[in-house]
Picture 1 (cartoon, rainbow, N blue to C red):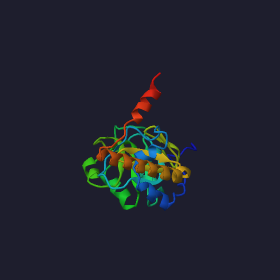
Picture 2: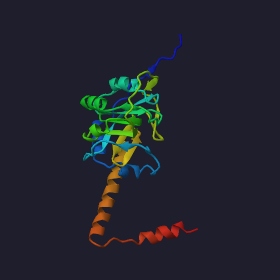
Picture 3: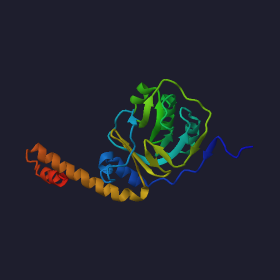
Picture 4: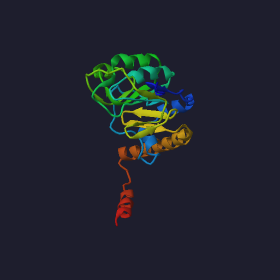
Length: 224
């Protein structure tokens, strides 16, 4: 008999400190991303839920599944604790939906902080009526298979972004960002600094005193 099982399952990583997650929920993803070289984060996935006042932030529980199959997703829900974000690497396949209205409702009732799928969803009208965060690559009415195989709590790729179990996963209407927990405290401080600088710029624009001389320096620097 083969030693390979239909689902490879690993324990979930320790949860990130609640105070750190609470601080990140107050920050837009862009302000954090600006301090990570502006070259990280997922691409090609869209939010399908009703926008809320705060960002999504939680400890990543990861899974990798065959495209269009949700057996791994169903089992991975059992590895999620309240406040976790469940991420499914379905290889970007959008031929069959991995989840829909019922399973997203179930996840929300379990206290999951959000769901991210590099694959397809369905029941979009239902999902858009709720503020429970759901991100996906596409939409189709065709339902899932339930055969496997899959892996739970392994490194995955979501829209070109590597996510490790236990990473912090942030999301808002602009997109998704994975943060190593050890970098969070510094990034929070820097992101707050970005917001303070932006507030000063906005005030200057409103008052008609925006100093645009910095553009001359940028242009001069860029001339070859």
